[in-house]
Length: 528
Image (tube, rainbow, N blue to C red; front, side, top):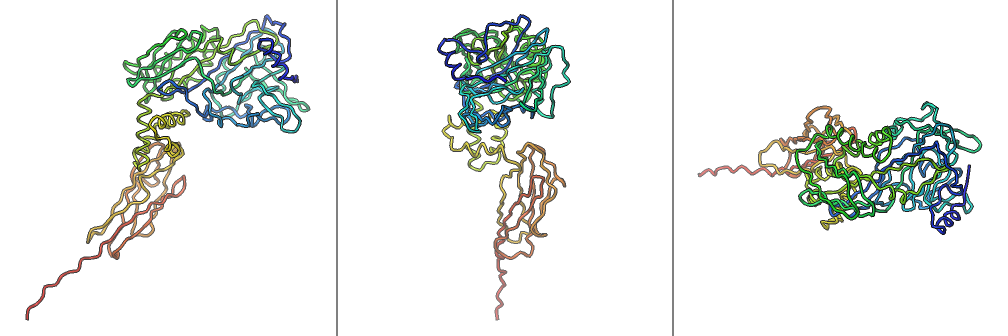
């Protein structure tokens, strides 16, 4: 394995005014029969005013268990990220998702590749990297990598092998779509004493950072989307998409010159998202091919992100980032230098509408006053926002000066069965023999909850389940009537409990009834 003194080499590169490639490796060789293609995505979220929002990126499409990260780095020795922060603990502006690098060659050869991320940090990668940083060696010594990078040394390009050695597991379905190309298989030797081989169709990595992309997206109260190119290079193929309850609007903006602005009205009849899927898939794949991705690479990229890009609730803009921007954000060096290097990155700008911000703030305020229906609305809006729930909530409440309510509002996402109240009170009328109560219930968890039975404190209190057992699906709601029999009860307050035995545990409902003192019966006086 090659190991390089990165700080010295990076300092040399900066002093000379060049970007160094694979550290310490000559850039003089060129492989005329080597072609390298890369695609990836950058995701951000913006408020209705166009300001990029900080968010935590812990919730993302799962990866196969064999993919490396800072908890399982695969590096020789014990290395930890020098920031000391695991993925999802840092507030970011950009999530770099699934860049993959393909290799094409007519013969077997060995390649080195290094990619830097000066304004961010790497979080996941596969196959095993030779070096990753920034990182500190924790088993003593002064070794550390100050640069944010991934370096794969001795990557064996195998154009004539089958895919039989590629690993699979039961999670990370998005990951496997990227394999559906004609690229060569890759082999990397791992370990020192007990060497093994890892095979893959590409080099894969992810990361996160706090920098801006060159597109500003805002929304007006009437739903108009405003686009502004804040960069120095033209932006091409901007797809403005709004998805609401299975229906979608789509507008395709061909290009946006530097400093240019354009308004996009999402009007007309919305189309079912399953119908629009094919149109958007074809148009986006065509745009990717125009940027020199191969057809199967473009199809693999669309297949990888189709459900996330096209079907998730919300308003977003998908657009192609300029190659110059990509090279600045992710300097890459390959040795030997390929005859052709194509890099295509897609930006995803998620934007929150003014109506969404207003509706959420109002619902949170009403929820804080005990409004059960408002609580359900907050849960629905945050659930639909998915991994953007946290910035959506924070931004909406900050604008409405309700930020102190954010912690309780965000907690509704971890709710299970919720009730309009767990205690009900009733004042009986003289001579009344029954007290009736109704508890409204909703399942705010992601799984079905089953209430097997309900049991009162005694025979005088009974709950009537709609079914037994009662299956309550996610987001479903219902009512549980409870009756307390008062005949023969003494005056005063009577408190009874009903216990619900459910798949997520026991839930106790309390009913209280005040029984009035009987009015004395007046007897008529008898005259002597």
